[in-house]
Length: 493
Image (cartoon, rainbow, N blue to C red):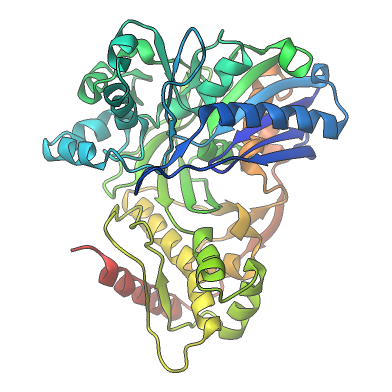
């Protein structure tokens, strides 16, 4: 039986394909960036055709690079940028409007109207999500209202909606599969996470016809087959999960209380709460972590909008450094006791504040402040923001045992040590940091029998390094108090 697994990792700025062998080792990688469109302030769009074509291109390229035939693949797994919304014609497979990306804020007024009508508690109760332009529901309604004739065509069953996983699956299977998995469904604000089905009340509230929606399956399931003409042989698509949930699986966070934090452009922290959804009183999101054999497992999630993007700004905007790698030397020179704080609220503050009108600031400047202090403050801001999330999680009654990290900033030893110190929990960095794609591969492998169960996958996780907290409690408290004061100063009151 073949044991190679192909993961399609369709992200916000690029499409990637990675082939893994059974032990989780990377065989080959292919990546292609695609265009971002910003038609108006706060609007972000992608070309759905480009998402599909770039995804297919990297699949073909990765097979060629690996020197493998499609017939040697056991299965394909898909992981994707979540919440991004596409509506297309069922007959032609052509999108009726550009994809509206998760970052897009065009429906802010619609969301504000629903909140003003007192609808948020109902949405939270059923979907686990807040009312926010981030999620798919208001994006769908906007397309149906703005594209001429779209609402009538949707009600007549002529149109299909999907998040990016569903759009790719439709094209991979030649239009035979209109399906999604429970993790992606749980990010639309239309899915009842308790009953594990589309919710009629939420569909009415957001004015979304049921005829548009895909069927929801487990995260490891039979999603159909890639058409033989596309890759040279028919291959089962057997695993799907949204990117942050896929990273949780890739990090083998299968026990209640296990958590992972992904440090990319933003930062997403997800903690497994087991088979019981935990309703947050601190404005975190409750979401489906994964669903296997009909059983849903849940997580609480906190989103930080700016993590790696803060270092990009210091590099490209202020030109204080030429490469992000230079930041370590600056931080080592300054040390943890840095009196300067950077609050990178460039697009508002995410969880647990959800303050879209907050704006960034640098505080604590003196005549002695130089480039090193500013760069160090940028690095520390990521750790302080993570502590904000952990505190909110703990206030909700969840216990954090350890934190598994991945993403670009996780390779920085200084940042990971400061993170362990400020959180006062061990921080574990895995040997394989491609955890998002790996999670999609694991789910596909689980469905086709490459793995017998989650224990098989958990055994493959290997720690590369553990960072133990070593900071004096008094220093930890005073540094964090300084951060809280800085955040309070940028809040939009």
